[in-house]
Image (cartoon, rainbow, N blue to C red; front, side):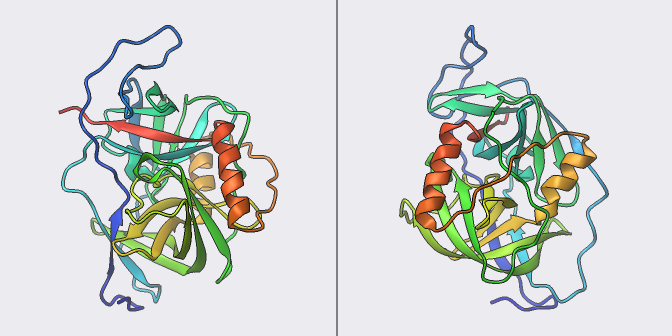
Length: 283
């Protein structure tokens, strides 16, 4: 049960999907990698966080959500989305933190290494550079949604493409490792396709509003189905500006309903604008 003003915390699980450690395969002529469904990648440099230090724990009246961090970072997969034709991608910070190598999926059994990774100090947001180019881009918004607004969370829970429909509940604070960060809280309504397993793997994917704009990055979900946390809408824009990186998302078309959101997601995946992000951790 949530309490406003610093009572008990709603426990949430960070959206990680642990996968088996894989051996490296030889690099082929086009820069990709052969391998099983969760392929190894190499070359990405994970840089230190940028921006101001995280704020201390809040004393305000926003609801707080406790985040359970894994005891040890393992190989995992999340989601990322393109915001510039120059190979700039956004994802969740926890998807790439602690990774020795980061890559973007090119097929179900192939991935291509990314370039550098820039992490935010004040939100669960990260930028990947030197990624796969995409002419299909997502438009970012700084505006907060209004209570009751529709949200469409896109990504690859358990490695499978899916869209989760939700409605905006309000702003909050995510608390992890003694720090807090602003988040948006959403109440889940439906999933396409329907499934019962947790949402691990959707982290880092975009949350679109009814206008088709990105209003947050998927960050965490409740142990019990029903609550999703995303970053503050301005987090992605601020991080890109701090890293002096371009974002050239084009004007977005509105999304009328869940069927429209599913079709939009399908088009974005086909256009190469939303992909799985793979994290390799050396033993």
